[in-house]
Image (cartoon, rainbow, N blue to C red; front, side):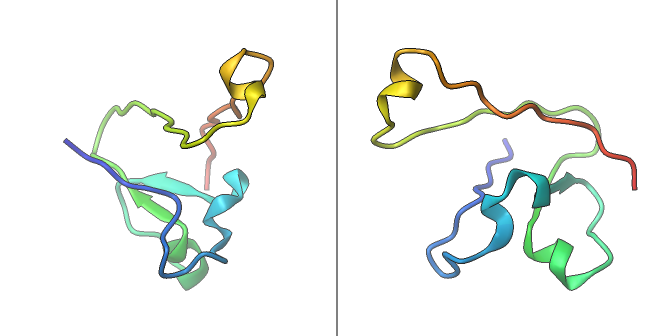
Length: 74
């Protein structure tokens, strides 16, 4: 089972909190900036799950829409 997180206490200012800056793929990225926001993924298919601690009501009662995961070509 693969399990990774976008947030790390050791670097709370990481740009990995910006969904457009996260790189989820099997191969290691080619630049240090991309490596900093890289989530290693298995070779092949995968699934995403979100976990929220102390969520705001918009998450609990439904009006919040999760950001769409988009396949990007490099």
